[in-house]
Image (cartoon, one colour):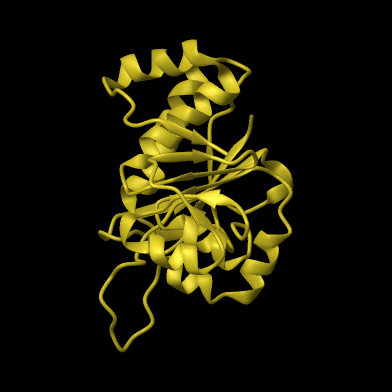
Length: 202
């Protein structure tokens, strides 16, 4: 499986680092089953500045045809309002060209934390079951989504996670789903992390 992790200015560090690390580790533990994840930008290659000012070089632009699964992290959704446009998911939610491209994707989609709100803005969660950060759940429901209070929700080709650290649990579930429980357990052992909560299946 080939995973792309979407990167953008204002992305939450933990939201993207968790799947990058877990999936990268799984690629080493399961040669051939999972490929090393690739970070991609919403536009041209370059450097993105994350929520807490970490700067990350992103080697390539988003290419849906080059991935089997697209992971959309969150970031910046719950920042207090200001007079200036802020980076993060709210900027993506206003980008009609980007949302149009996203709506046409035909690969499984994964939303982590408020990255789910970007999927919702593209109409991809309407009539589906999902979760997101606790402070965004009411907004997600208002966009026609059945919101479940679970840490990970698997609705087939749409997998979503709750708050920031749920990216670890989402990524480990993806490893189990695509490479098997043995690989997921091995990854947990290496990371010294035990998954929290139950995966809710639609």
